[in-house]
Amino acid sequence: MSDRTWSIGELAEEFDTTLRTIRFYEDRGLLAPERQGTTRIFHTRDRVRLQLILRGKRLGFTLDEIAHVINMYDETPGERGQLAFLIADIGKRREALLAKRRDLNEALRELDDLEERCRADLQRLSDSR
Amino acid sequence: MSDRTWSIGELAEEFDTTLRTIRFYEDRGLLAPERQGTTRIFHTRDRVRLQLILRGKRLGFTLDEIAHVINMYDETPGERGQLAFLIADIGKRREALLAKRRDLNEALRELDDLEERCRADLQRLSDSR
DNA sequence: CCTTACGTTTACGTAAACGTCAAGCTATGC
DNA sequence: GCATAGCTTGACGTTTACGTAAACGTAAGG
Image 1 (cartoon, rainbow over the protein chains, first blue to last red):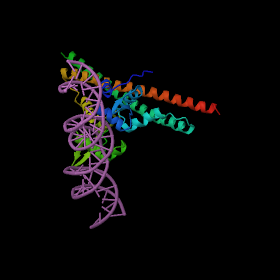
Image 2 (tube, helix red, strand yellow):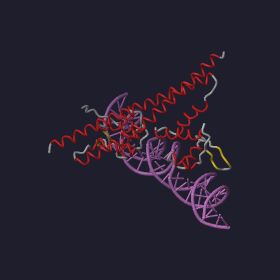
Image 3 (cartoon, chains in turn blue, purple, green, orange):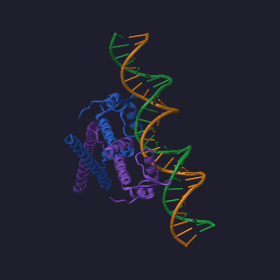
Image 4 (cartoon, rainbow over the protein chains, first blue to last red):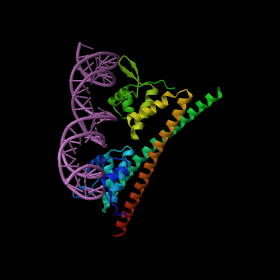
């Protein structure tokens, strides 16, 4: 597909992060952009990985957890046993995400309750005048 | 309601956290348990707050953000202007949670895709033998 | 009376995730 | 030909969220 490439600055701007952060992710082995001399060249593949990383961060995962998941997407092994392991791993990851979604939905419900109470309070203020 | 109380150790065990963590939250003003002498006595109110804090953490919010939200639940002001502010604030919080849920659902979808690919690979391995 | 369990404060340590210089290379426009 | 913009690698600093150790208080049980 798109064989466009990006500089580190372009990616930082696009995803509202910093050069330092992107370099840090490379240091941690989460990214491995091409090099032309010393300069980093990011391909679509790297871009996608960066998006995965940042999304993981927004969801409160650590970089280690994120690295784990990213490698799941990467290594897609051909061997039988490894595939079984991977599928089991996917199950665990899904459970973690679902747990998070339960937390999230609960928080949303409570927020709705709070707003309702606020609106009721406002109504009462209007009525009593 | 329940006028039961808890020791710091009981709460730590129940929510699978540590004494240090709970004390730290008190230090940061997120909890303010009763004192009998120097010993902390936690009431239902404190317990609920602790649950809120831990859930917030699981969702990747900072303690500052969590403090903000907790205070929203607490201060429920009676005045008109403050109520309007609070409602606006609730809107922002909700948007943050919804954004997080979008991220989450996307991650879940991709995980499903990956699993499907794995199962297809397994199937192919079985077929070719 | 002494241990054991549970609690307390104080204070320094630490891991994660970057921020912030410093010092230097490189390519392009004027 | 030189300033400017953007990139590079160190290396030390900072914030957040606790961990950990020291030194001590308190209440119950054998």
